Amino acid sequence: MEPTVRITTGQLGGAEHEGVSRFLGIPYAAPAVGAARFQAPQPALAWDGTRDATRHGPTALQAPYAPPVADLLPSSVLDGPEYLNLNVWTPDPAGSGLPVMVWFPGGAFVRGANSIATYDGSSFARDGVVLVGVNYRLGVAGFPVLPDAPTNLGIRDQIHALQWVQENIAAFGGDPGNVTIFGESAGGMSVATLMAAPQARGLFRRAVVQSGSGAAVGDPHDLRRVTEAVAARLGVSTTAAALSEVDPNALREAQTAIGLEVSLNPDPAHWGSTTIRGGLGIMSYFPCIDGDVVPGVPSEVIAAGPTVPLLTGTTAEEFRLFTVPTGVAASVTPETLPLVAARYGWPPEFVDLYAANRPGASPGDIVTAILTDVGFWLPTVQLAESAHAGGAPVHVYEFAWRTDVADLGASHALELGFVFDTLGREGSGLLAGGNPPQALATEMHSAWVDFASTGEPGWAAYTPEERVVMRFDSASEVVVDPRAEERQAWQPLLAPD
Image 1: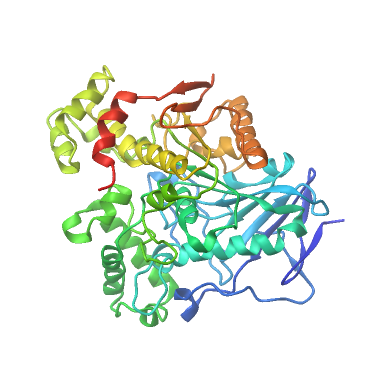
Image 2 (image 1 turned 60 degrees about the horizontal axis):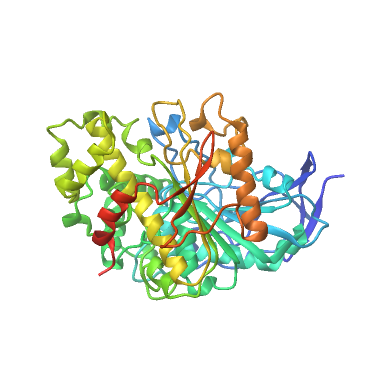
């Protein structure tokens, strides 16, 4: 007999496979379409009878990845009104007291879905965790700055989903008092933002930020420029009332086009400081500091405490995903390297330091290493120090295993199939290639399970005095203060004013 559960809005019929019960496409909020697309999330509508929860639900408004990234990262795009939905995998819907993990997918705040095969929660459920994957609003609908709409709608969706978890997760065997939130890239930025959001306080016990940042937020005046550009492209006024009348397909096309424009021309004179501060020119939509859901820069709010235990880290070569397939790395020459450095404001002596520490590296490799540190590693160090200052234990990792796919090395998003232990499943682990080390997936996945269960992933905590980092690789090891000389060079420049 297939599993059923009753939640606040009605009965769900799921499916069971190899001891794991899954319930997919569960609406946690009312359909955010029409005028509601730019309003705060509302409670989900109740239904009669048993709702079929055996298929993934619709996804938030988005376009698939474009080449060449489309060959490396999977997309999941399915239109429909009930895109504010979540998936639940559980080892025992009749049980109780199981730890809960809530996953927020990444995708630069313009892509991402709980239906991507990599994010299948079966392995977490197999190991005694109730896994919840959440869809939230993206792009201009998720992060608009409008005079007649709330800010940070995507973050408000995430908070609404966490409230749903508090009300309903016991029906799946989960413990609402033992919830860990986690996310990667924009999902990791979301987690850091939630750690600082007053409305999210008490909705989770621990947090995991993978390849994220506690500073990826923007000034509302800067972010409004992106919303204005979308409206101008559509030929409508920059209001929620006007944008809500636009055909969703046209809205999707406009937000995609403006996102591409920002990434190709991240000139702060045109777009303001937001794109440079938060995304180094590859992202266009961010949470904004609104004095409400986002009261300030998350890392600064977190440092003021109190905060929750944190597990955070990066891959060792994050930016190779963005510079190698696109040909950007190959285009950097010894002659153009100083020009690139000047564009980003990197002191020449810093470039010389990176080159000296990487004998034989190409100019493109040096640029990529600096971008990795400035965009990911240094914000992670800052977030770790903030959480420590806020009174919580912090554990830090680095994923260093290098794939043989497309010369990507230890690139952005490579760790996902290892964390979810979904290597080899159809549609999952495209970056990992044909023969990734399963032992490493077992090790890393177990660390996440242990952290969600006990708060201890299996290595010593990180402090500003003892910078302990677990380096995951074919032979994992604990290291202390990796690339210390480079960190020490950057940190005074990155300290808050």
